Image 1: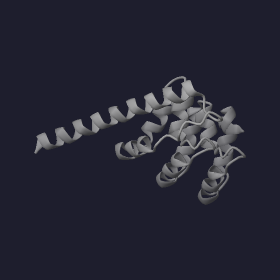
Image 2: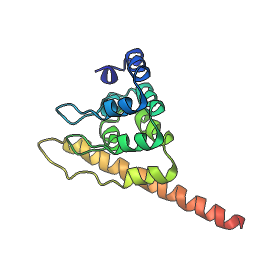
Image 3: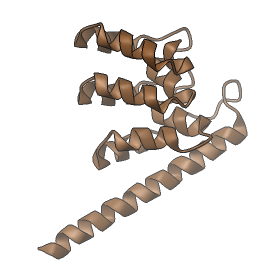
Image 4: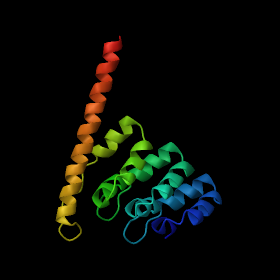
Length: 152
């Protein structure tokens, strides 16, 4: 509830008063919709809470949290794109991972469209946005490879 509300003080207190293993276990907990605290922070646009979660876990744990899926079978990034009203959530995730990990996150296939749990227009916007992000990541990767081979 604190992550969904963007209550940074409550989140900070909870994260700072439990050890690393318990913290990660708590952040993996799911509600009846299979949502984790990171899903809620991302869904509701609380990038400050997302950053706090990122800073409180190891890099491997962070990547694992990003790959967890909720009841729509979307990862945190896919859900951020699906509900994005501004790019802050996507940028928060992008800044927290390497280029290689970013491409892996973008390569996770979106779940098949299901009328019972997806809004069709929103789903199509998400597909388009993820395709744009994939293209941009591939171009950047190709430019980096070209620059590296040109330096030799």
